[in-house]
Amino acid sequence: MNSTTTTATSISTDSAVAPPIEPRWMSVVFMQGDEADAVLDIIDRNGPEAAINHLSQWDYGDETRDAALVNGYVYDEIPQSPTDFTIRSDAVGYALTYNHHFGYVSLLRRFEPVVEDAREPVAPPSRFGFERQRPARRANGLRL
Image 1 (cartoon, rainbow, N blue to C red):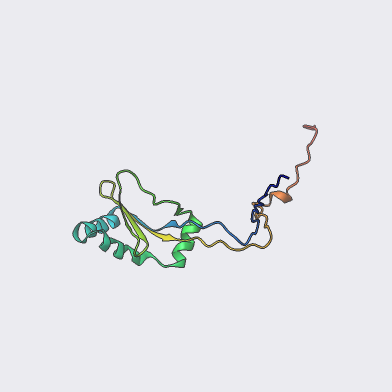
Image 2: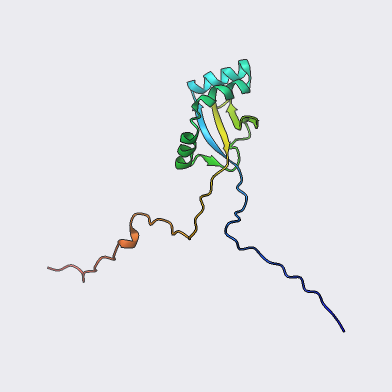
């Protein structure tokens, strides 16, 4: 007599278990020109940590986050070019990107997006009311 053992594997389709949310980076402030020159001087005199402390004045918490989300200034990774200097301060959750040659500084803050629970699937809102538009009636051409 031959006996076989079958192992059943169950795949959880429970919608309560959400995939882990990856932290993102949002723009707090971006400066160029004379404003950036003042901050670049702070970096040269006192170091990048002093610049991070100075630029963090422009972080208004949820208001800054909401503005970044609305305006599309949210990133998976810290945006930087090959010529940028980037200082990441995990203790305070900020990243400073600056470039002396191009004359700009940028402060970003790390945050974890909040995913709202939806018990039922929700259709995306219609844009510009296209679902209410009807095709125009076609005339047979010019009439004299």
